[in-house]
Amino acid sequence: MSFLVRGVGAVTPVAPSAEQTWNELLRGTGAVRQPMPKGFGGRSYYYSGVPAKFTAAVSRQPRLRRSGGISLLGVTAGLAALEDAGIPVEEASQGAVVFAISCGGVDYTRRFYHEVVTEGANVASPLLFPETVYNAPASHLAALLKIDGRDYTLVGDSSVGLSALHFASQLLVTDPDLPFCIVVGVEEADWVLADAFATWRMASKQSSFAVFASMQGTILAEGAACVVLGRTGSSIRVNTNAGLPFFTQKEAVSAFQQVVAMTSQERRPAGILCSANGTFADRVEAAVLGSAFPAVPVYAHKPAIGDSLGASSLLQLVLATFALEKRELPPTLHAGDRLQTVTREVTGISGTELLITSVGFNQQVNAAWLSLA
Image (cartoon, rainbow, N blue to C red):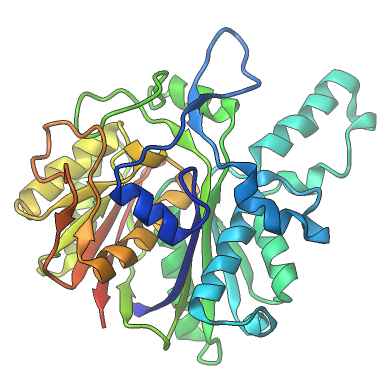
């Protein structure tokens, strides 16, 4: 299924907007890495945080004054995408909201259960609990936009943003009166998450990581990205699909190969924006992309920004819209030699079609095809 990208928005560790993020990545900027707070057991991890000033405007909304950081990020990206699409907030109630999340409001969840464990259930703050549920960010944006009927949250791995985009396209197909969908991917970082990923040998303890090199794990990041999907109002078209599952890492290559073939349909993209993050995902993408598209430049944004999980694949799509418009891909920071087509400097592209790929942590692969309509 295909629809038009009417507008995009993002807030990332390197910039408060989608366009500024793109410009920083073109310059080869890497996000500031800092040790995660609230750790214990002598284990420490780095992460890329979003400065509070990037979400200061929405934090002044009465509804959001006590909200967690993940909600502030999601609302910031959502409102920015609506503005980019030229849709006034007063008219946003006609649309639908679809959120993509991987781990959710971990900070407030940690705070809530810390009170339960240390002081007992009777003193746990009821003000914290609503922010611990997965659909808290979506509910805040929907309430601000006065959307009271079509508000969804999909929970998955780092490919869930593309799944949410496909879900939004299904909503548009089944409801001809629905003019647009606001699709938001969002994530916050916490020491508990990093420690869990380290247990699975997927989190680095260093302040940087390389892609398409020896597997050393990723660095988590905060962030949000949004795409307004509709039938009119843009020249950029995106084709989505449901993705495929895999059940072991050995099966991942076959599943990814199938989803790439299903998405590309024997077409050759001008460039590829991939999900490489220093884990087994790099080996999967290198094996398939190096074979299927041996001369197509590949860009990986995660060494620069970090892995924002639920937001990451939608951020790839947001960056792809700029790549199509500007006809270039940014340099990939810290790129190894296991995929020779990785961009190592600003790389021009001549075509009008791009492939976005994602290999998730939790046994899901997906892809999308972006083109100038």
